Length: 189
Figure: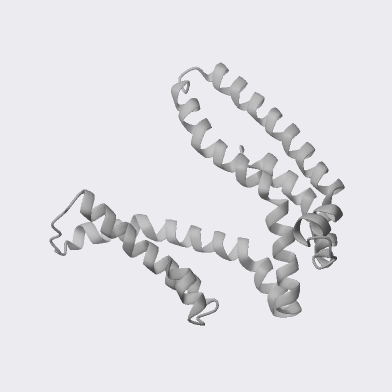
């Protein structure tokens, strides 16, 4: 509701910021309504130092990952402009759809499954290699299919019969190979 209202009021891209802030406030309000907590603010230097020591390495690792995963968008947007970045974003998003699905399944299902058999090393190894085999086969197959139908996807599905998204075709074809490799590497992570 906030995003739609912000668009009608002319906030353009700021509607995303407004809707994310509203979602955060709504989530906090709902959690508080379900589970009220009285907050007491106090400062403990020893605890703060421990948290900073632990969290700083995580923060810098996440910062490096953010910079690494977004450097392509920054470079393409800076050198090629918004239109070229839009075409690249469409190609990138479609080429990593399989990886996103596999990543969710890998993180949500396999961790709990493997934790149950962590004492049986042979079962763990066999299960991991089996999952890696299936994921690799599925990733290569899905991305090869996407590579084959990429022109039709851009013209018929996204472009509604027009060539509006065809400038993304070259990047999509290259990124299909990247998508297959990234999906294969997902269980490794």
